[in-house]
Amino acid sequence: MEFGSVKTIKSFAESKYKEKGSVFIAQVYPVTTQAQAEDILNSVRKKYYDATHHCFAYKLFNGHVKYSDDGEPAGTAGIRILNAIEHFDLQNVLIIVIRYFGGTKLGVGPLGKAYYTSALNALEISETVEKKIYFKIKIFYDYDFTNKVHHLLSKHSVKGIVNGFDNKPFIECMIEGNKTEDLIGELIESTSNKIKIEKSEIPQLI
Image 1 (cartoon, rainbow, N blue to C red):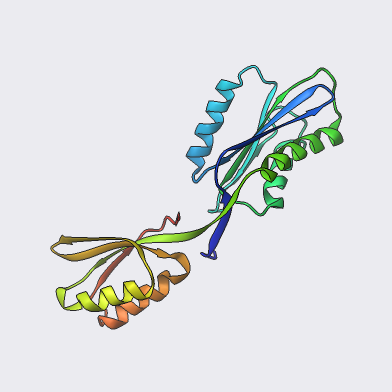
Image 2: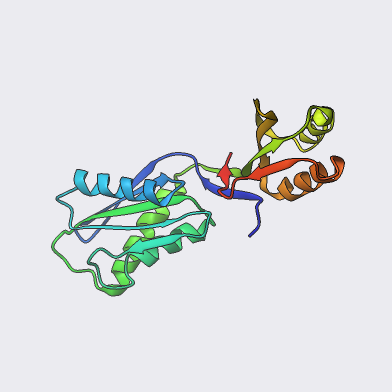
């Protein structure tokens, strides 16, 4: 997996699309976890309890993808919403398309197009942002290595430095994903492996 940057949306957006009496309300949300996406889905289902369908798709930068037709003919809603997300090459995005049936059946082809167009319209008015992937690392070291550790952290432009002490000094910080292994390798080499480094396996977007 590459740990460069992720293209996502900045904030919530909404658009409406009408087709033969049916109203499609497409809502776009930035999300970072599956739990967050599911919480939003539950909230939307409660708010629009009288809607005919609540179809959705979301894609996270950890590779997790989920979508649902929510009772619509298979392949007409969820996958089409996901297609719209992938059209813009986005991640960490949830789109919910709320449909109020207008009394006229659209047919499989036009229905799929309606869901795709609804999602596409909402994304077109969404502001996109590039976020970099970071990992949190915690470095335990002896006082003798203080200057070397700080020099290397400065060299790799780490963020969110927190200094502490637990039997020996430690530093917590955030390092860009693509620089993580280089920094760890240089820390080990410069201290002759007399250092302890803990790396979080959960990446974060900044």
